[in-house]
Amino acid sequence: MRDFYSVLGVRRNAGADEIKSAWRNKAKSVHPDHNQDDPEASHRFAEIGRAYEILKDPEKRNRYDRQRERAENRMREQTILQQRQAAREAAERAKEAKENAERILAELQRAEAERAKAERQSQAAQGQAQPQPQAQPQPQAKAKPAGKTGSESPEDVVARIFGDSPEATAAAESLRREDQTTKPEEENGGTFGPASLRPIELITALVRRLRGGQPAPETAPDMLADAQVSIVDLFNRSPVTVTLPDGRDVRVNLDDGLKDGDIIRLKGQGLKIQGMQRGDVAVTIRVQKTEKFRTEGYDIHTVLPITLEDAVLGCETSVETPTGSVQVTIPPWSGSDQVIRIDELGLVDTEGKRGVLAVELRVLLWEKPDDKVTDLMRLMRHGLVL
Image (cartoon, rainbow, N blue to C red):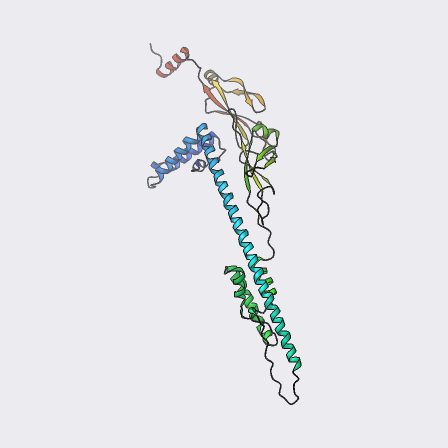
């Protein structure tokens, strides 16, 4: 779904004046008459026009916001399902690798036992043979370890346990370099096989190079939810109850500084996945829009209908707020595009300051036509007729 807010370059909580100003600036910059060498100028100009057509109308904008919110919720659900599937696959791979490593370790332990047995037999045979004084000393043949390990290189052991990944190959190459540096010592009396490390030492060194120690368990993905709150709830900081996708109910505290779209994280109350650390719950604040009030950031917007004579002459009147009524002065010659801002009547921000109450004026005509007003308007349009 196309993001009309991004097309105009405004925030999702932008007011009507900000949207109108952004549309004018964008329309001037991409107008086809000013970009005749750009074949995409007409397309971008039309797209900006469609975005403004939707966002300037409160009803169309609300409908668009709801559709976009549903689309984002579907995307979040798909992401959670993909993350769960990836976590299950990772757990299965880890289980398979663990079983494989245990099997290979058992093989290496058996080979180590056979090698130790061969060494003991060789030492016993050498002790029984008594050398003659007249005989020339003969060099002793080196004993070779028995078992499968004697014919396996570090690369073979790594490949059997961890596969042919680049990390495993690099670890095996490191072991081979260590083996080459210790071979002269083996030739002078050592009895180890081609891998200079014993099997258990080989596994320990390999795991240390591949993992760098025991890693912390991976954290499960966040569980997402929305909290529908009213403006009065934010004023009173009343806790709300949110139902999670798995059916659980959690209590969410509303502190100062919250506005529509903010996210509250509930640590360690999210998904439970075997082999993973429990995730968080990410609760998005959704401030309910009513017929009288809506929020834009920390500001509260309301609409005040006024008659034609009050718009022309000005007046003193009262306007309703979420916490009661206040007096407001309507200046003479006030039109429907005028906004009166009353300080310290909005929501509380993160610094403890309050936003404004933005009163949007709407000039209304009488329910029934008035002859005097009709004659006056006709006189203003056509002039005095004698």
